[in-house]
Length: 246
Image (cartoon, rainbow, N blue to C red):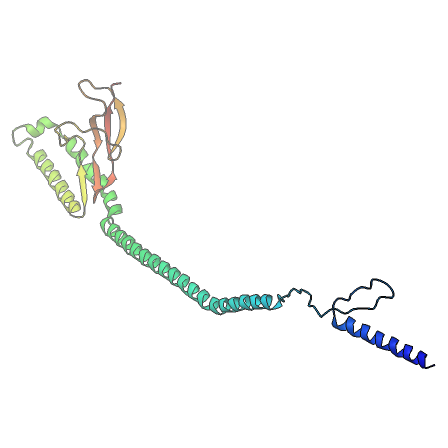
């Protein structure tokens, strides 16, 4: 019975040693045989690798990104407001320049309209007088040239006085109209180069075209009625006959 107690104590101590060795030592010496006593080696550390957590890095990166986003968010309102003000200034400057240009154009247009109204205020009145002036020309042309060139006698004295009175009245009327810008031009008069005038569609109205020997095409050969200008603007074109040989 005493032997059984010793055997039980030995087994208990052996199991206790195996538990301690398994908890403290990473490696145990394998047994070579079932009856060979177990030998313990000195404690040896296993090579371990250290692992680092990436949570801090990701958190730091997120913090940095969040910080940059927050800084941008804090700067965005100011920059946006500055850009908006710049755009507003540009738009206001453009509107100001346009308004000044429109005002200057309005002034120039108003000035031209006032000048035109002043210069051509008698346009309708002058047009109504053109027929009267033409009648003076017709009355003077009705008198034969040989009677006007004849010596002054008792027979044609009254006729000469009438013709001179018509001319005087016509000249007074033309001078009065000339003071207001109305002038008469005669296509029968030679041009600046001394040659007969040629047809100008801006100043002349061709009533007919015919052949004429010794004259060039486009020359004015006959004047039916003289033309008039009012302050440089053609009030009535002269009615003429034009040479056309070809």
